Length: 425
Image 1 (cartoon, one colour):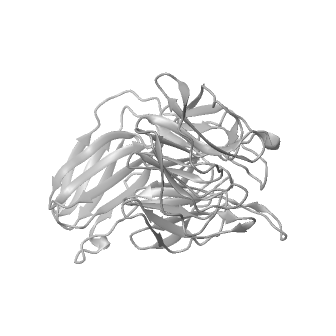
Image 2 (cartoon, rainbow, N blue to C red):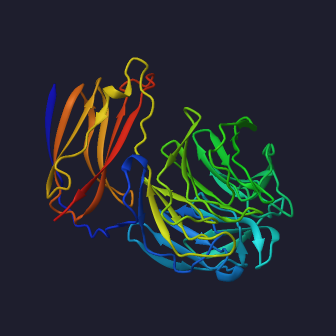
Image 3 (cartoon, helix red, strand yellow):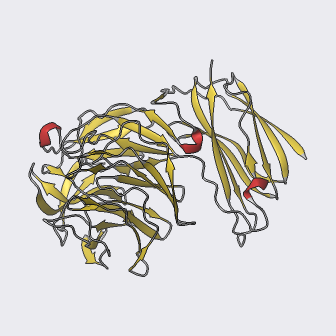
């Protein structure tokens, strides 16, 4: 049974900075776009999201000269600013945000590889840095992950690769040591999904790892998961919509050196990996920051070693279709491609669901910003159509996401899908 829902967008002004796609790609494997370049080209600087902005502190500039610069990217306006620099020059640092503040927790100081245990807190209101309690183990090239208001600093190196796992409590300004990571490694990546912190890749000496280990803060235990297809160190990762996305990295040794272009996705629900659209500009020593439906990857090294770039990439992963009830296969839920596409200014969006459910259908821009909610509420089973008018939007690429949730809290099914559309005026 088909249902027609008429929907006209409420007028509002929007100056959309249209992205330029870096290559022709299938949305089934993800989409890449180019954003405003990093003002100071550098590598070995992770990213952290604070108040909807991406902070990029420290790192190596060209020729292996370290810096204390802190630059901030504004996804909403595709622009940059510079804030108060770090109190010391640092690279291979660990950075995370928690409770409205930004934290740098160790790394390497000066342009050498001198392990640091110093901790600095940045207050965005006062734009100032404050020294906090030192990290128990001085190290660099590890990872920092915020979880439950605390920051876990895992792995890294201080002469040799480490498996150290230490927690910083920003409220009490205290540190606690927890169960060490089973596989010691540096130049690794991590992301938190649900109740676990997933730590992936890295290296020991010049040997890259494909190890994936998951840590439970609740039980203080580690679990081994399916190995990443591509063993690599110097990679980065971000968690988004219940999946872990891993990018780039470098390799070097007697057989040569280079940089990985691979983008790989891990699904904790099935403990499986799949390859996605590779990076248009392969890099190592960069960070990843998830905002909305997008992952930003800024700077890094385009060649193994000390090369740097100012590239700022935006990656939109393919749609995530999560599990549905055992008696309702995913084929019974479907989001169709809008038509016409491209369109001006009217298009039809069609979807079908197999049962009565809570349904939302929203429009996003390429920054992951929610532009409008077309539909939200209880919908009966069947095929549905919505007519959308985009009179007041600028030409550009947009995405529409369908989410279907159970009416009963005891039901386990979920379904979500997202597709791309183009407005041409």
